[in-house]
Length: 280
Image (cartoon, rainbow, N blue to C red):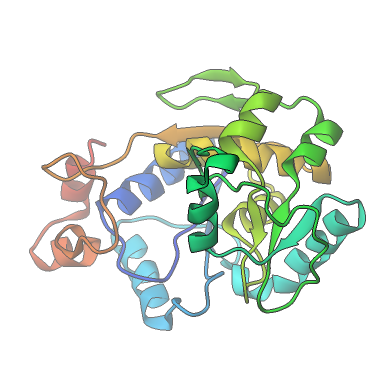
């Protein structure tokens, strides 16, 4: 299969240096291998996505000298695919509907009889409150994966990490999946899917062979590989790169407008300057 990477920004704010690093790295890896570099617009959250930010993404990437193959894929055009997969998981008994709010989960975590769950890729680990309550899906519920049932079916799964940290084969244990991740959300309230489900389906649909993304998403990767295993989808090779941080060591976010690619461009920086700033 052709070496294929992707860059998948959300059109909810300006691209900053961290985005530039991830995009350039994925682009250069694909081109060096004679492969394909794809662009995906992760506009799953339609309440925050803006056409103006999407246009800015295209402009910034072109200015950086990056080119992509095939049409741009938008998550908002594939909600039916996510719904179909959710239905499939529901039919084999791997999901349940949950009415708990973040406040409810926090309260349960602080209740002595529940113990105090730790934090995982989705924040506070879910205590299982609605797991056996048979709620029907509606605007007040989110859909969660029943992790206990899922890992019994998947049993054992592995992925290869070739980033600068945790390099080599990774085999998450059942204990890790249950105690450090738990019943993750697969579809949020009034949304077609969560990040976890959509990214798995999108990567498979576009034949991504190498996922290049920030180290902050390494902890979410076992969720994605579990879903790939349950759905019979191929597992890419993962490369979680180091994060670009500000002078205080804090990870860059979209609110860091001073580090936005467009702002640096307006200051007279060149694409070569951007590469230098991110250490490429």
